Image 1 (cartoon, each protein chain N blue to C red):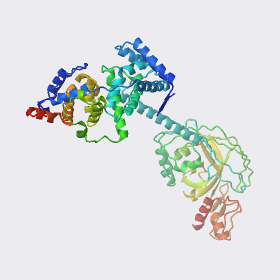
Image 2 (cartoon, rainbow over the protein chains, first blue to last red):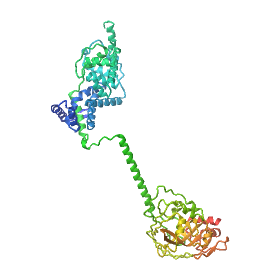
Image 3 (cartoon, rainbow over the protein chains, first blue to last red):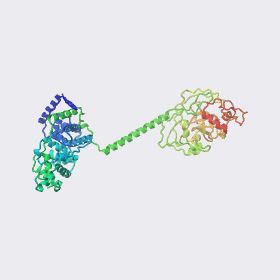
Image 4 (cartoon, chains in turn green, blue):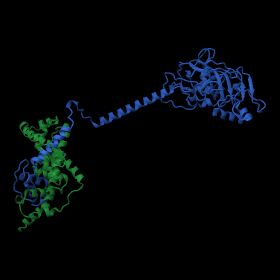
Amino acid sequence: MLNTPDLVIPLNLLECCFKSLFIMRAVLPPDDLEATVEQAQHGNAEAVGALYQRYADAIYRYIYYRVDNAGDAEDLTAEVFIRMMEGLPNYRFTGAPFEAWLFRIASARVIDYRRRQGRRPQAKLSELLSDDGTLPEDSVLHGQEIEALRRAFQQFSGEEQTVLILRFVERKSHREVADILGKSETAVKSIQHRALAQLASLFGLEAKQRHYLRGESS
Amino acid sequence: MNAFQHTPDSLASRLDAILPAGRRTIGQADDPLVQAAVRIAAAPRPRLSPEASARIMAKVTAAQSVAPSPMPRFLRLPRIPRPILIAAALLLLAAATAAGAAVVIQQITMENRTPTPPPTVTPSNTEPVVPLLVAPAETDTPSPTDTPSPPAPLLQGEGSLAAAAETDTATSTETRTPTVTATDTPTRTNSPQPTAIRSATNTPTHTLTRTNTASPSPTVTMTRTLSLAATLTAVDADSCSTVPSPTVTIILEGPVEAIGESGIVIYGQTIMLDATSPILLTMQVGDFARVEGDAVLCANVVTIIAINVFVESADVIYGDDNTVLWTDNGNCDNPPPPWAPAHGWRRRCEGGAPPGNSGHSRNNDHADEAGDD
């Protein structure tokens, strides 16, 4: 038995899940999304697993950048897919991408998480995020960069977080982000412009740019 | 170029060139805003570890196993617009309200059907109680506009019966016990359907030494109309049959509500008297009278033909031959017969209630009033 703080999972169940995931990848074509969703709506466990496999990482990343730690991100990711399971019988394809629905569920989970937390971190980001002149690739550790970005994202509103994460982490187009947020592309571009300006300021990139334009060496 | 040199659209175009959607390629960033976006895009992407992924999947699988199976499509109810749902709910509410009202009406009807002896029919002397029970007719359908009102014209006294008859507008049918007639409305007609008759043998004498053998559950089915004058004028005692044959003796006590040329009304019940009876000359509206008589079914109306009438306040006792048996002369040297109520005389001269009186406080009250007069 594998014990976790809130769940005791039989090992044979884990094994079953792993096996089913491999089988699903072979059985269900990855781009036959609508058929997979329909099967999942009828309680097909393999279809549910295929949907999970397809979107789990994206949802996890989206949540991870918006919560305080990886454990909470994992729990919320599980909640998102459980909600997906509960909502699947009533889900209808309306033209919007299926993942838009999942991201909206995830956003709602994060909002609920923030409400439960009752606080947002107010740390001085200037100390954490000030650019020391080195490129990200040269950062000491990837984990530190991820942590720095996560802390930076938490200074933004939910919409701004969603735009930054989906546009530059998930590399979604303006149209896709607009669909997920339920907004127009123009609105998404405005949010993106405002958020990047603030983020550049947090990163100290504007100061560095002014330094560069004046011909001064750093 | 700084942040303020970009518009949202120009920045979006620049970002599309540097960080194309759906690809992982990263172009050369040349301004702070694009550099900020590039920093995000170039950051390592956090991923779920296989163990974490398995844990999440296990949670999802467990939730799936306990979740209710999805309803088949053909059983799903179509989505109904909210206004239609609200309208349907209002209709259901109205229907439920109407059904509830029907139940109430039915309950009222059933209550009317419950025979209850009138409180004013009391035993006299040693007689057993002869309750006057009135069963409602089957056609008893109260009108929604049937608002009980006191029969004021009838209670005004002599000569008002005809006027009351003129105001009689038939809107509903109803039968009740005489006890409710005082608060009844004259705008009603009756569908009398006498169905059960209490049988009793009575030997009415002024001495009240009768031997009534009233059955334990006497029922006299009678319907009445509040258009008393019409009833009185329509009744022809010769052409009417006594119900049942030969007689049904009814004893009725109560205040006289109206006095006509050939009868009086007590609790809405018509009591026919001989038009030449001297009691009609001495009786006043409001007097407390005791009537012993026979029920008569005539023209679908049951009336009472009086045999003995005792008016307590008048302190005059008449016999069945209309002779004056006793009169209170104001002194105590003229005692009334033992069977006569004579409340005033007894209160004044004996300080008590008359013999054989049931002791009903109302009777005593009237006796007191008569005595005071």
